[in-house]
Amino acid sequence: MDSNKRPENMARITTKELADKFIEEQIALIREQVGDKKVLLALSGGVDSSVVAALLIKAIGKQLICVHVNHGLMRKGESEQVIEVFKGYLEENLIYIDGTDRFLDKLVDVAEPETKRKIIGGEFIRVFEEEARKLTDVDFLAQGTIYPDIIESKGVKAHHNVGGLPDDLKFELVEPVKLLYKDEVRVVGCALGLPYAMVYRQPFPGPGLGVRCTGAITRDRLEALRESDAILREEFEKAGLADKIWQFFTVVPDFRSTGVREGKRVFDWPVIIRAVNTVDAMSAEVPEIDWNILKKITDRILAEVPGVCRVLYDLSPKAPATIEWE
Ligand code: XMP
Image (cartoon, rainbow, N blue to C red):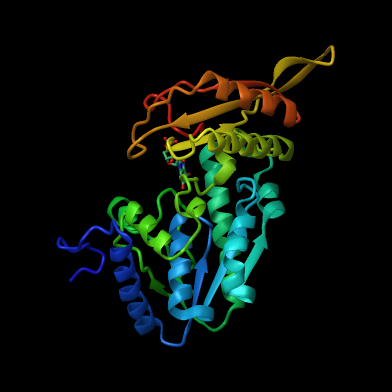
């Protein structure tokens, strides 16, 4: 039987009971596969890797070693959340790498979107590889591959485009959620006790804020992006929109516009709000958002984020616009 093919009679995991059953089965399978050996996992904080981490912690405890690489392009508070959720269980087995300078230095003056993606993805693999080489007694590599990755991109997590670890690092793969769809992974994550905000996190691209700070990334513009994005998220949560809108974020483009502050002309950045609803991200609609909410967000961004003099709401559906700006 092809282990990468979901059996036709496999029931969809929709309830806590079904998730608990799946968890029990996987714990037994993981223990059988891994024995007393160690397993390495790149823990991004995304739903899939977080669920795999929680499953492995249940199955093999401290035989799991997680590496969280902060590429400096995370949303505000995101790396902190990963550490807060997992540090208690993993302690010294959670390795945190702050790669901010390394990634941002490599991206200086790089404006072409696909080159930016390749640099971020490639650097990610190199940082992870360096950590993997330091750990001499690890035999297994866990991955948060899910069924759509297998169907759509031959088992590679979508959009990585940069190859994997070098061949001489011979790990056997542990992929406990590879036959599950995203909604099932979420049900399993809840049953494992992961925080709701982590399990129902909106999709976040691998290159992170890097594709929302358009053109060549600068640290000051990246900071404006991170802060404005945090304000948008906070206000959408307060307004009860966070659960209703599929994906939302801000973009800070690499051009300035004229503004006026304290009687003087300034030349500052615009912040663009992007919010979309979609089923499969192949096409997307822009939701109508209450004017008062948009106005509150605009007022806060203009008052709280240095270097910004304008806020815009992107009304473009996909197609012809994509969801991300680059
Ligand atoms: P687009 O912009 O193509 O986005 O309409 C569709 C969905 O894919 C996400 N996206 C990415 N995810 N790496 C990722 O992991 C990427 O390079 C990337 N580019 C876009 C996007 O956030 C949206 O959910």
